[in-house]
Image 1 (spheres, rainbow, N blue to C red):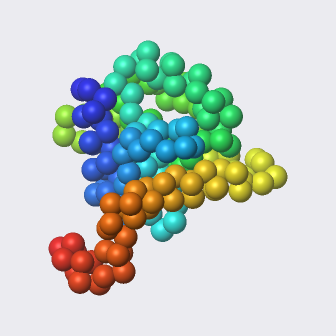
Image 2 (cartoon, rainbow, N blue to C red):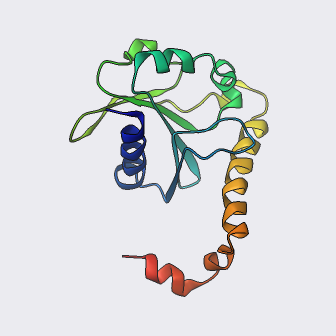
Image 3 (cartoon, rainbow, N blue to C red):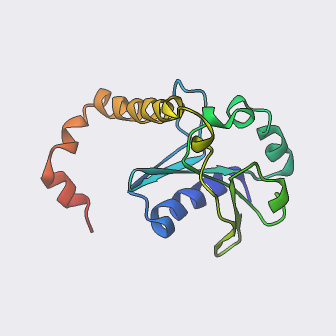
Length: 160
């Protein structure tokens, strides 16, 4: 299974199984972190990092926002991989693990939420998510589509 296939499955899982309102995949912004998939449900963010190989997982540990978890985004954080690439005991503190099978996503470890409570202030983390979302919204604005968020007719067209 390729990384791109995992990202598609992660997005589908966030939207359909988890029930996120929306999901962004592999969006590059000024925060430096490029989440494979991140969705929001009731104001809580759920990050899914996809790893198609063991070497990709091992190199992920070197990233600044992995070494200093308060600098990463995602209230709840998961790794998604084919079965066996990552073992549950190898997970960073509070991360969840999803195994991606041909026909289903298996939750191997549920995340415990990130480490906001360990730090006197979590505003920096929250500011990074706001910056990330503002970057996405700015792109909508620059493309001339911002008015669509005010138009209820557009919303009704999109609702099944």
